[in-house]
Length: 431
Image 1 (cartoon, rainbow, N blue to C red):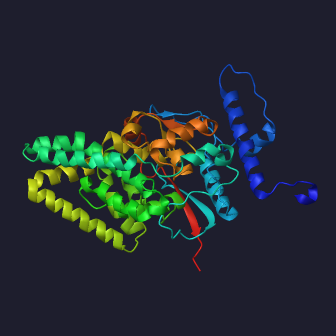
Image 2: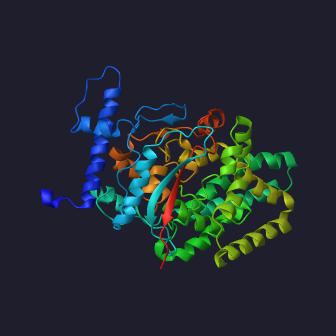
Image 3: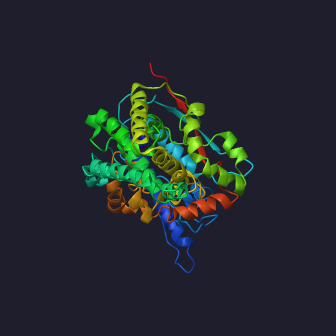
């Protein structure tokens, strides 16, 4: 290219391609609206010849829970990697995901082959992309949002104490009321706590320099859930961000058995109910890892707490904690976020945000596109990311109801455990 008088480096070329693709998408959306005047776009005909058959901007299926008028599945930014090779892998995966549609109900997943990526990081924290020519360069105020959330530890402590009081209050209730409160109150609080643990796994409680304090605080937040969870979640959640939808790497992807068996509405309801079981067993089958010392400590601390509660107030508080956690991760309004985040509700998109009132209870986990772009920004500040960089997010499809997400998941033939993109990463071996 330099021989022809061009002086852009590869990064600048990729950024220019993103800008052209975004301009094409917006123009196509505008021209697709009835009664609108035809809108021009630079290189529109050429871009349409390249992207017209794949960049769908009109939803093939529109759900009550879903809003969107298409757009680029690449948010177009997220501080880009200094490592050009790794950045190219991310871009290629996103581009591939844009060009795919709903998997046929007789097929399992959509499999994409990607270039080699570096081995998993050894640091004790989730990595954010390094600064580059992406959004944080265009909007430097976004970088100021990164770092610990000083309020998180106090909110979590209050939640733990609230559940401790609830354990005392249910100890003498009839079993039917223990069950009711486990689902209606304890389940909501415990599911919210799992999402606080999600935030803590990104080191936003005490910051990246205090990784061990974050791990220990995660164990403290784990107490009301009743089963040890926080440390193992952290171990696998690294892979979810580094190898999103990676076959054999990201344990958030249902197995082939799940996709094949749970395909009818009754079976999909059963799958939703058993979702906590699959989240526990799937890592052991898909991507088993050695047990760490911190996991042993997590188990010991949790068992000690459970035994203390049992010795003080009997079995009902233990049932209240564990049943609440299990029920709220199954068929429950808040559990809709599991499905809303990465299932293909629209052709070409496998990551969605949710903008609705339940974000208040879930540490803004609904701002999921924003979270994947900037995982080190606390959930409490993710709405500011969308506000600051509105041009990158406002045109993307999103959900408005997790209840409708669950309804559509069960009763739409094009949705189910199989409605996921599955990427095959060629992981480079550590020397």
